[in-house]
Length: 263
Image (cartoon, rainbow, N blue to C red; front, side, top):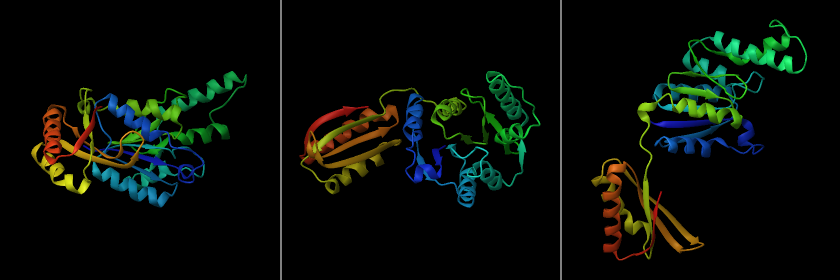
């Protein structure tokens, strides 16, 4: 199962706000021995969202989608999810109750009384209108829940809400958690070109199932100047043998190893 992240909002694409979700999601995954497979930024365009969500639902990937689940005219994610599934939208009863608890608490703090049939209350209940059959994702910050259908999970765009909700989502999948340990080893190579090392990289991937080789060249690294960070990542049991084979290949090639890195 691949793991993906969708980050939705015109404010991200325009630069009005900086994305805080990608780095945090990678961190939460790493804490559980998991890795991100892909990420994508999308604007608040209902047709575009519907088409992309339809693809994601069909993929079976474990995906978290951040943003666009509010009840203002510029929020389209809930409607797009329903359209992608071919399901109607409906007020989730548990979501309604959680939202009502939040409404009453806010009113009490302000010394006011509130009714469920007031226009403001009815507008807030819209935040609990999800595709029919959806489950809810608890929101420890203010009780306003997110929702999920299958392996696709929808959380708000606010990091203070989204990040603990992301953790809740990942903990729905304990079977995907792995023992956290060394998952990446690399070395700094000097005196070689990427093209010349490509056959070695291909041989390592072919010889060690579950291992990926990566190459990160630099032309002006502040410490090593022109160099390549060459390494392996993936299956913990095969990591060290694959790294040893990679290192021996670099030595046989005649390149200089500047330092070795473990992450």
